[in-house]
Length: 168
Ligand SMILES: Cc1cc2nc3c(=O)[nH]c(=O)nc-3n(C[C@H](O)[C@H](O)[C@H](O)COP(=O)(O)O)c2cc1C
Image 1: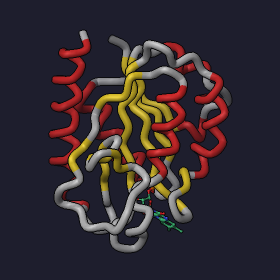
Image 2: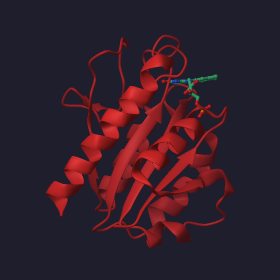
Image 3: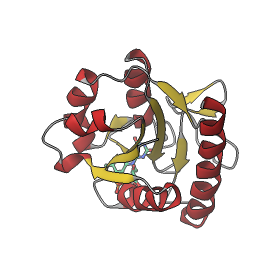
């Protein structure tokens, strides 16, 4: 299965997480801020999409621009997993909410989303990215819980591998 991580990052936190995920799963990796179009999306069976959240629940800036390419891509039959960076103390009413914007788009386009993540161990008021008590993807918080990032990524990647075996 061909897998790639696509991420958008303003201050480097999502980029760092993307690199760690890439190393765990041995995938290709793209910074969406450097892509001129969405052609690379078509090359992969599975897309791991990562964004930080900005301005009260919005996507990271490069994702704002790349979203039109995601919306026009053929995602039917593709597997998607999401990860999001946020700040649960500073922006607790919209913690990692940007992930939800990508989630809604890929679901509408027919992708199968895996990698939902328990919301235990976080302290936030609300998040658009929680459905039925779980985040739609891995939630990471470099501002308040950077010490948990590596273990969260390792556990999530193991979880993805298990889900992929079940999908096969
Ligand atoms: C102006 C500003 C707005 C932010 N808005 C949110 C938000 O609405 N929700 C959230 O969870 N985090 C928010 N954050 C926190 C960032 O998502 C967080 O610092 C993240 O790690 C940045 O990742 P990046 O460097 O990859 O862009 C905000 C940060 C700033 C500076």
